[in-house]
Length: 319
Picture 1 (cartoon, rainbow, N blue to C red):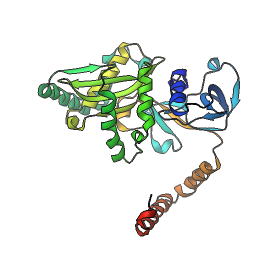
Picture 2 (cartoon, rainbow, N blue to C red; picture 1 turned 30 degrees about the horizontal axis):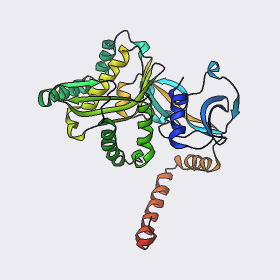
Picture 3 (cartoon, helix red, strand yellow; picture 1 turned 45 degrees about the vertical axis):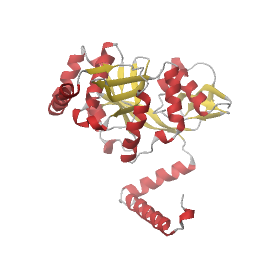
Picture 4 (cartoon, rainbow, N blue to C red; picture 1 turned 90 degrees about the vertical axis):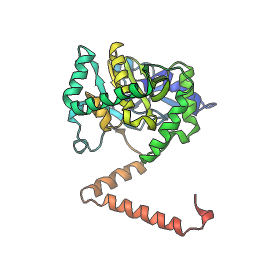
C-alpha cells in the first residue's frame, strides 16, 4: 500500500491539520478508481501537506464501505521507463521517478548502469566528494539520524532554496515543522544524513513503507556545494535501500534532472474525476491558447498590469 494511504500518514495529518474536527479514514471512489483518503466533517480531502500523489487501491486493498468522490489531482495513471519521459509526449501528466530494484542482481550492477549513462558526471561527483574527506574529515552516512540538529537544518537550508527557485516555501507554514516532528515522535519519519568531520552537510527527510523508501525534503549546506554532498548522500541511501531488500527507491513527484539521472522508471501522474468549474476553466484556457502561443503572453500582461497597479496604489492598500 502507498504510504499516503496508510493510517500512519493520515492519522498524523488529522492530528496536525484537523485537531478537534470529526475525521475518519475511508475508501473513496472517483470514476473507476478507489483512493484511501482522510475524510473531515464528511468531506474527502485529496490535497494535504506532503501528500505528493495518490496511488489507487488494488481490489484486494478495498475493505469496508466505499463513498463517492468527485475529483482528485496527482493520481498515478501508469508507469513508464525513465528514458521514455518527454514532457511534450505527456502534456497532461507529471512524473514521479523511481528506481525499480527488481532489475538488478547487485547494487554494483545498478552503479555500473549509472556509469554507462552518466560516466563523466558520476566520476566528477565522486572526485568532488573524495575531496570533502581530505579537507573536512571522515564522511559518515546515517540512514536514520536521531540528532536534534536535523530538522532545523532542513528548514534553514530548504527554505531559501525553494524561494530562489520560485516555489512556495512550505516552511512558511507552522504546520510543516509540527507535522515533521509528529511523524518523528511516532517513529515514522526517516532522517538520512551525511556528516563530514562531525558537521552536518546534507540530509533527506522521508519515510520507508511497504518496501519503498521515499521522501520530501532533500537539502544540503550551501557552503559544501562544490563537494557534491547531495550526490554522496543519495548514493548512500540507494545502496542502503538495495541492501535492505526494498522494492523501490522513490524520488516522488517532479521530473527534475537529478531524479531522472538515478531513476529507472517513473509514475505518470494525472487527474481523475470531474474537476471543479474553476479548474475546468483553467484547463480549457490552456488548451485554447497552447497552439497559438498566446497563453504566456496573456499571463505576462496580467502580471505587468497587476504590478503597475500595485505601484500606483497607496502603501496602506498593499497586501
